[in-house]
Structures are given as structure tokens and as C-alpha cells.
Image 1: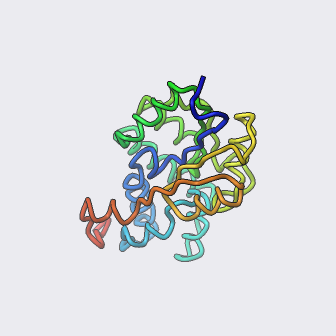
Image 2: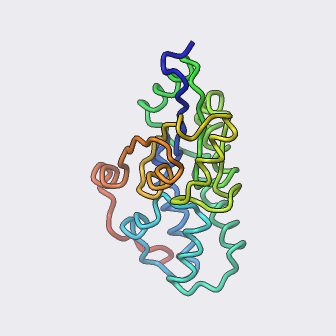
Length: 209
């Protein structure tokens, strides 16, 4: 029997379980370069961490005046990202150990992510986390992405538990806001500042020149 009682744990994926934001940055940078925007930086990317891919693309269309249909952009972005994700998506070692520990205690777990179902499946399968994290919700499957609570509420529904009995692990402000809106407890694990300092990412790297 679990020593954690009736608590269930809901994980964000990108930036929380796995270090996938660099792949999203690269996929987005090259997609935008094909539309003539060649100065998209990590600082620009930081503004969209924590929200769904579709919502990011909607904002890019408005910000950069992109006329390509949203569905086409989404398909292109997913194709680029999946290629990078399948090639390399590192799991944070401490988070893998934590998932294994929770599994050993019999704690119900889920993943609630702004990524597409295909991206989530590819990452969980490729990293070996899929054997423990079998309840998965994508923002594509609910009406609203983070910071709305929809993905977390759906995760609780699929687990068959009350939102009040869930603890969310999140790295970004929109996710923490979504957890709060779902009336779930939240443990925030800030991602952006630490990653950028650790990897010393340059401000801008022109594409296609």
C-alpha cells in the first residue's frame, strides 16, 4: 500500500520530466525562418514556454503576420519537433528516479501536457517512461490549453480521483496557474533561467543565411 495515502501526481512533460524545450526552440526557429523570420531567439522562445504548440503558432501568426493556415503550420511544427524529439530527448535523472519511486509506492500518476499526443507518445516511449506513465492528456484533447485547468481536470477524471487529491509538478507559470485553477496543489520547478545559464545559449543565430 502506498505511504502517500490517496495522493495522485500529475506531471507536466516538457521542462519538468524531460529537457525538450531546446527541441521546441529549434523546430520553431526553423519553421519561422522559412517564413522569413530569421532572428527568433531563445529569449523570444521563453515567452511561449508552458503554453500549447497550437496556441504558440496562433500567436506567431498574429505577431509575424504569417498567412499560412494554422493547420499547415501545426503539421509542419509537429513534423520538425518529432524528428528532433526522437533523435534526442533527455530525461532529468532525478525525475526518472522520482517516477520509479512513486510507481513502487503504487501512487497513481498521469502526464498533462501542451504537446501533441504524437509528441507525448514519442517522448515517453523513447525515454522508457511510458511503462510507468500510462495515463496521458494532451492539450489537443481538451477545449483549452494551459493556463486553463482543462488538461489537469481531464487527467484527474481519467485517473478516477478528485482534483483536490492531486499534486501537480510544473516548470512554467501557465502550468502553475492551470493547476491552481483546477484546485490542485502544485510544486513549481522553474526551468527557463537555469537552463539558459547552464547552456550559455547565444542570443541569436540567423537561419537560412
